[in-house]
Amino acid sequence: MKIYTKKGDKGQTQLFGGASVFKSDLKIQTYGALDELSSVLGLVRAQEGLQDPLKQSLLTIQDHLFRFGSELALSAGKTLLCTPITSSETDWLEQQIDQMEKDLEPLKNFILPGGCLVAAHLHLARTVCRRAERELVALNQLENKREDLLKYINRLSDYLFVASRFSNKAQGVLDIPWVSGRL
Image (cartoon, rainbow, N blue to C red; front, side, top):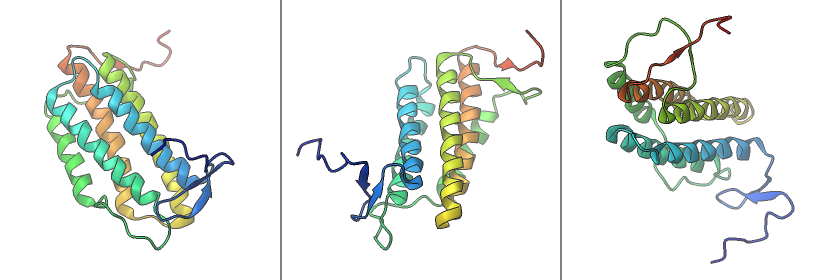
């Protein structure tokens, strides 16, 4: 099977199930942002110094994102061939957040993205996640997506924020507090 099909040469692509849409369609932009987020998480997973439980959790999240994107890429009236994202995946994220926060000092300031390389990339993932969330909200206004998807993506950005702080602490790097007018 060749990687190129030439079917998208005029700016269109097919959803799962065969419906053809423009590549600029909000649905494509939304699951494209999820794909971008998964790629950033792959970059994080490749980093030296990433703790094993976090590395495995990020792999689980990448699976979630593929399932999430598969649902968004589905043509109307077609059946999803994988397990949909439900409240159990959001509950799992919350458990992961709670576990990491046990070892963290409570925040007293906003923090700037950065710190160790793993944390900096997790902050990048968080911002891509927030963009995907904004696109999902816009798509939801047009197509009324399942509430489980909205909850999951919102909680995922919280997870990525806490994971960045957790990674800084694990590597002995302090979070960078934002102080107005510091410079």
